[in-house]
Amino acid sequence: MPHVVPAFDRIGEENAFAVLARAGALAAEGRDIVNLGIGQPDMPTPAHIVEAGIKALRDGHHGYTPAVGILPLREAVAADILRRHQVTVSPDSVMIVPGGKVTMFMAILMFGEPGVEILYPDPGFPIYRSMIEFTGATPVPVPIREENGFAFSAEETLALLTPKTRLLIVNSPANPTGGVTPKAEIDALVAGLAAHPDLAVMSDEIYGTMTYDEEQHHSLLKYDEIRDRLIYLDGASKTYAMTGWRLGWSVWPKKLYEAARKLAVNAHSCVNASTQWAGVAALNGPQDCVAEMVAEFDKRRKIVVDGLNALPNVSCISPKGAFYAFPNVSKTGWKAKKLASALLEDAGVAVIGGPDFGVCAEGYIRLSYANSAENIRRALERINDFLSQAR
Ligand code: PLP
Image (cartoon, rainbow, N blue to C red; front, side):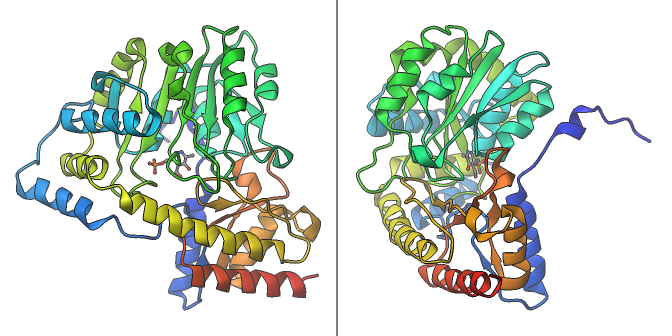
């Protein structure tokens, strides 16, 4: 038997992909499945972005690019950051990567090793914990609480820091909760980090364009005092409906940038060239497509939240960002993962059980409202029938 290193016994995955596969298998058997499981916009990539990708291929962009990405795209990322966050970053601190995940992969590899601790949001994107465990570091969950609007608590986060903590992962707007951490809480968090000058921070802001009501996304890039230890993660997947193109970007402090570049050279060489040119068109082109998508998600958000709160024994706070609702189902009498599985198998609705997002997430399920209003209504009717009968 080939001898795979034990780290691979510790690596996890995203159950959303398993649910997607199971939903696909059921659909192939002829079942009518409504998929509120996977977190990707259901809209196509805007046409001008697709055209730019095609044109790049026609224009002969077929070869390797610099590992850190083409300069026009790094400049476009810097311009996007200035436009959205009013912060100046050098294109030389921007790295183009094949999807948001690759930034977290690099950052966690850079800081994780046995004996150190890495703090991550829980419930949170499952890959954080999976990667931390892969490195042998100790994953320390930062509880993200419903009673706190699913925002980070600065006090609770800071209380978990120890001399062994090397990296803090922050995510707002958040998957799977839709929580947005308000500016005051981020101010308090950053102020507290002054006492931990060696701690690196990775801020996952991949849903940064998606906030609702009066809520404003507040980037950690705005804090000069942590810029020399902040890794900023963003990408095109969610904002421009480009999940399959595999395009992400990050901003690194100078002393970490070179390490990330070497990792890119070792791992993927570069992001495919036509995708990078499509990214230039996405960031430099008209932004009304983003506003339109966000407005559409907002409409669906209201449908999903009202529908969930009308279900027996279910309650759902209104998510302030991203495109997920994270209802509390603890009073239904179901364990969350069992409920998710029964909803898929018996009611034909794909959702994800809270525990797939962490050890602090029993009693919740995640619904992605990146699906049509009609499908969301159908899903809610089915869940209602299911819960009413199963009582
Ligand atoms: N970060 C969060 C919080 C996410 O939810 C996701 C995708 O679902 C990612 C990062 C990864 O995005 P990408 O598909 O660009 O790798």
